[in-house]
Length: 340
Image 1 (cartoon, rainbow, N blue to C red):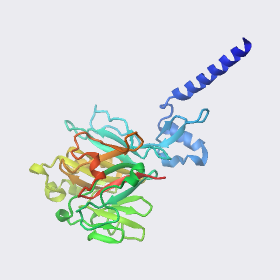
Image 2 (cartoon, helix red, strand yellow; image 1 turned 45 degrees about the horizontal axis):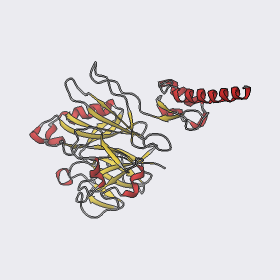
Image 3 (cartoon, rainbow, N blue to C red; image 1 turned 30 degrees about the horizontal axis):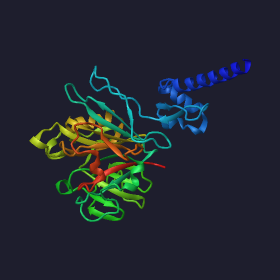
Image 4 (cartoon, helix red, strand yellow; image 1 turned 180 degrees about the vertical axis):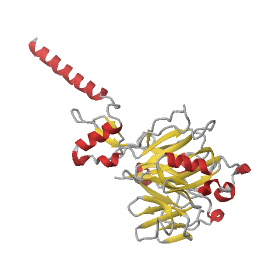
């Protein structure tokens, strides 16, 4: 009986330990407490990179510690009384945690919610893809995203206006699909998968490490401020929408001081409102991408289910399904992949 008692006690201890590990609250550490843990943990956790924000993942090995991953700072409301939805990790998890988080936010009183996606460039790399007919010609990285890359694909989003409409430039791997212009807002991809945003010819330039460039209009956010041009003749400056509405479906991409990317998009946004949301989300340099319901799109993907890759749009009202980036889409776009 005593041996049976010991066995029963040992089993109970294992159950208790497992229960404690499973129930160890994910909300135990928040804000500066997370940064304090990072600082106390030595060089394994670069405290400054966490920007006083992280989230905990349950241990995968019995008796091991929870792991601290990088996550975006929670956003404050832009409208009093309207809470901002919590950041939700999207796509598959990489070696350093999730690379993409999304949320929704109400940008103005009586306005519909819009979507925000945050991309950690420490955990993800970006790739500018040419469309089948935009900008024209054959390209090393051209739609669709090949099946060989599905395992690490976590997101994709639209490019800018059609090249014939704005005269914006396109460059990929030593070739020009459209000339690059000084002064244009530019999304730049480097050979290490990092992306930058700035004014071409001053803030970003051609170097041997530049892999691709996508230009569109001029900067909407510069040095953390919405440019005055955002409110000056918005239709002629930022594109004519269906019905000539200033507030319409609109999207933009920006970069933060910590070198993370922020995508913003949704209905009912004027250029100034889009810029304001980008700044609210921490963007210091940002540009408009596209407008009108057909062309504003951000999709996330997972590839661990029994049926293979599956995608979802971050706003249900987005028209093109996620699968369109996996087929011969005619327009250019940006794909986001987990780093190994």
